[in-house]
Image (cartoon, rainbow, N blue to C red):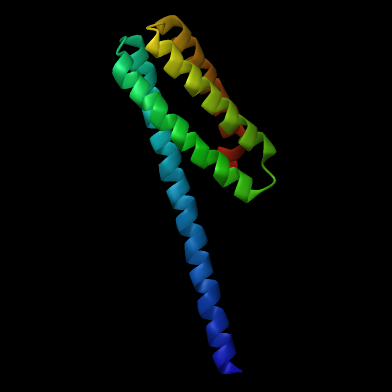
Length: 127
């Protein structure tokens, strides 16, 4: 019986550590997204299409991970939708930058920021 309790205790302790690490990684990952998004917006303003496009492509891949995270988390359909919407804005930004249409890229970047803010209102305070 005592081996069972020790095993159970170790299992629960390890599980708790993994969950805590996942939350930490998520916060760092989301901070990276925020930093890259701000840099991308700045590079759009500076009309640095190459750097901004590279950041948009990187962000689009990151938002795919965010979407997958919230799908697995469950009970977060709006976060999944916002992740998809963010990816749509990032594709639009990339296309606008390819065409050197900095006004369109800037408008999509503003929409992206609003989408991030909407999601953070709900999910940043929960985590």
